[in-house]
Image (cartoon, rainbow, N blue to C red; front, side, top):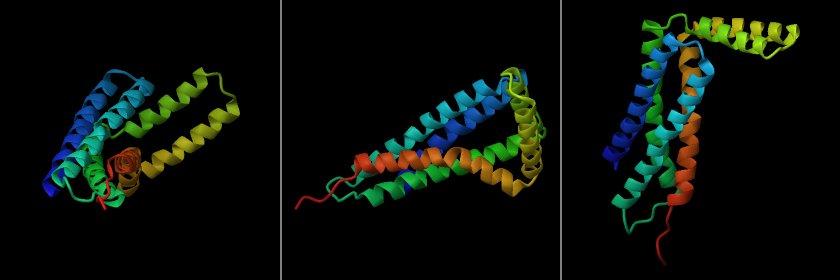
Length: 173
């Protein structure tokens, strides 16, 4: 069971790392972060489908035994945790080595998008203030780790909950 969890966690994380690396490289070529976000979240959903596949594989290994909601959830959460940690480690390396100005560019892009939508000066000023605070917070590696983890793990948590609800079984009486 542990080998299966690790295998599917690494497969899911591997997809995330490849996507993150590719999207980061493309980010250098283009300033369109909206498309990158859409592709990134679509990839997260694809990668977290391995949570379901991994939970199903563990269920098959334990064929004939009870596979409760909690057992399935624990399995799914472990797979999602491995994948999420890989994603965070990859982003920490990529952001420090290749994109030390990421948050500066991100803030600039968000503000420009708001301006192009015709937002009021007040909304633009509010966002500018918010982005300035976020840029300052992002300098703290623990904040950066937390914010990056919270990008991916909720998707994995949702995948684990759905997997546990669908794949749970009970012993026959």
